[in-house]
Image (tube, rainbow, N blue to C red; front, side, top):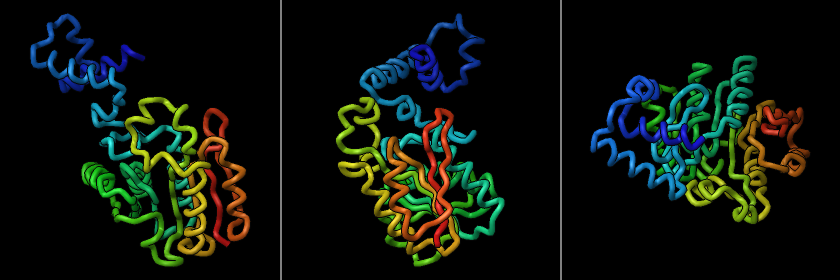
Length: 257
């Protein structure tokens, strides 16, 4: 892993692909290359995630721009994208909304894979700038707007609501990886003392904006399944769970009654 990280940072310093390193393994590094490589190594040794140094992260087969204003997209979130794609392709879905979009990875991936428009929101204006940059670069049919969860969304206007909300309990901060805790935006990570605060708000507001028969899909945090499922009892049916490759519950889905 350290070797791979060093290679990624060296490629970033030289503005080249990894294949170039192997093809020119005996070449001496120019002074300019050493300066950039040394700076990137120093940042990484301080704990800065590689993705924030290179400003790149692959997600669902595409390269996205990431900055410290957005959460770094994880492979586990691709399960949410896959579930959304299946729903859109098999059902009559007109309006898709991604809540807490961050880099726009979910909204843009779903739009490109289905060739459907997707709207998305985030409370962070800085995050929205990154999402718009990714949208423009990847030529996706996605529109972004600022909003605190669903406060700016009209009642019963959404057919499919997607979200990877903050779900880390504040008490878990001390046990998190340092590079996550110290570098990734806390507004996209933490959700009160229990980690359930945003789920509770999101599900309550989703019951108002999702049309009857519409679908809600959310990524799950560790050990949150039972508590989140309980929040769906009154106004949701057909609750399903998708597990990730490690066998952990990763995506919770429900239909609006």
